[in-house]
Structure formats: C-alpha cells, structure tokens
Image 1: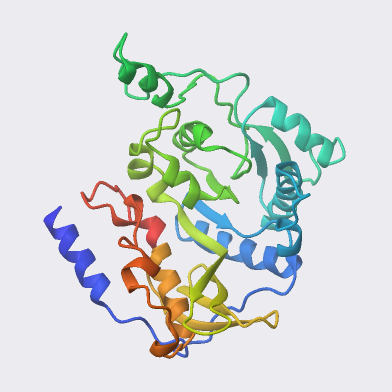
Image 2: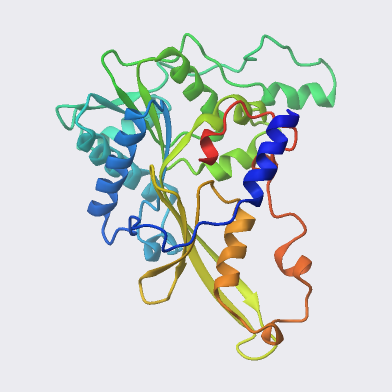
Length: 338
C-alpha cells in the first residue's frame, strides 16, 4: 500500500502533457461520427485485453436534455437506439442488455418489436426474473437495530441463479442499469470470462458517489469491480460559473472531458461558438475538481476581476470525491483512471 501511495504521489506531481504534443481526436460533430469513434475506441480496448469498458456521452442534444419537458424515458429510449447502433457497428455478436424483463419489453417497443434488430445484435435481459436481496459475501444484517434495518437494503443484489448470459455473445452493451443493479452486472462479468462488457451511458461518476448510502450497494463494489472499467470513450460535459467583482458579476463557463482510447484525456473548453478548445491533456483521468480548475484557469481572468470570496469558498475545500481519492488504496485496479 505504501508503494502504491508513493506511485500515486509521483503521478500527481507529473506535469500535464502540452496540448500540442500530438494530433489527438477531435470532438464529433454528429452522433454518427460519435458512434464511429466510440466503436473504434471500444474495439481497440478489447483488442488490448480489457473486458470491462466505460462509454459515456450525452444521448441527446444539450437543448433537449435541458428542456424541462424531457423525461427519463426520453433519455432511456435514446440510449436504446444508440446502443443498438453502437453494437451493430462492432461487427461481432453483441447483446444490448437491460436489467430486467420490464426494461426489455420497453426496449423491444423502441426497437420496433424486433428482438434481433441486426444480424449480430440481440436485445437481452440481464436477469431472467426478479432479483433477490442477499449478501455477496454471505454476511447477514444485524437484527432488530436501526443499523440492521438499513443494512438489509445495503446488501448487494446477487441473484446468482437469476443472471442470464446469452450464449455466443462476445460483447454485452449494458444500458439503463441503476446503482442497485450494478452487482448483477458484476455477476455477469464474472460468469462470462470470454466476453467483454460495455457500461454504456450509465453515469458511473454519479453511481459511484451513491455507493455506501442506505439502500445502495457498498463502496466495496467500486474497489473490486468498477475500478476495472476502462474509459474507452468519454465525452462528459459540465457547466460552472465564476463570480466577478464587476458586471456581469457571474461568468458561466462549460467544457467537456474527452477521451478516445488509447489517447490521453483531453480537457476541452466550450468557446460558445459550438466548438471546443483543448486546454489540457492528461495521461490519467483528472478528478472532477481538477477538471473544473483546469477550465477555470484557461479563462485567464484578471485576479482583480474575481469576486472577493476566497478560493476555498469558490472552489471548495475538497477537490476529490472518496472514490477519486481512494485514500486507503483499496482499489484492486487503476484501469478506471487510465
């Protein structure tokens, strides 16, 4: 553990690679271009031996996502359509996998009722039926205590006999899985050693943050499983604001963390003209707070223009979440960072 801590300290001290160091992929200008990038990146990661991949991007245009009339079903349906097209372009037997039968019924409606929309793509349910709550390590919850009450809901869903692999599948594209359903995905990953699993638009940053809360799986799920998810393709947008001492007093800014495996992670500033400007590249995935700070520094705001609040108040005391920090070195793999 001490060696790992020292290694991380050296990596943290390493300078950021200059943006002009090499010709890197550019953000796509259409969903078709995005899918081609994601497919090529995923196939490259699989060829390098990675079996658990993360693919994350906005499934709908920003204008639609920010529309108050847009619902979770709109996002879910868009992910079904995109996942089917993504899987089709992989050129190998693939299963677009949803958590359960009700989700499969809805996915089938979106796909026009076809269980096999393409010759190499099948719509599939991860579980054959309703999952059960139990402990992955055989532990039982304390009885008749408040801790015991919440522990019952914190036990991970195993449903070992419920997980239903699809014979002949080389790639599972998992969509619409909630945090409580991720242990079922882990069981699939353990059972299908010869197949790759793509965690497709699951918002893993948010899901990781929920681990350990009542009614959610334990944080150990990150340390033993989600830490192995190689970021094959990321286009993750974020919006922020900066307080100023004079009009307009509040300066909004936004950007995206962009990664096409095996290239490094790019921090991109939204120029407001529909284009991005690269401001940094990193061999390791920057924490959310670090990403925000890179964008803020790229604005080149005169210090006298900034509001009077201290940097601690404007940027926060902590810039890393518990899973980004991994203070105790519990992650069994660094794949999710590289």
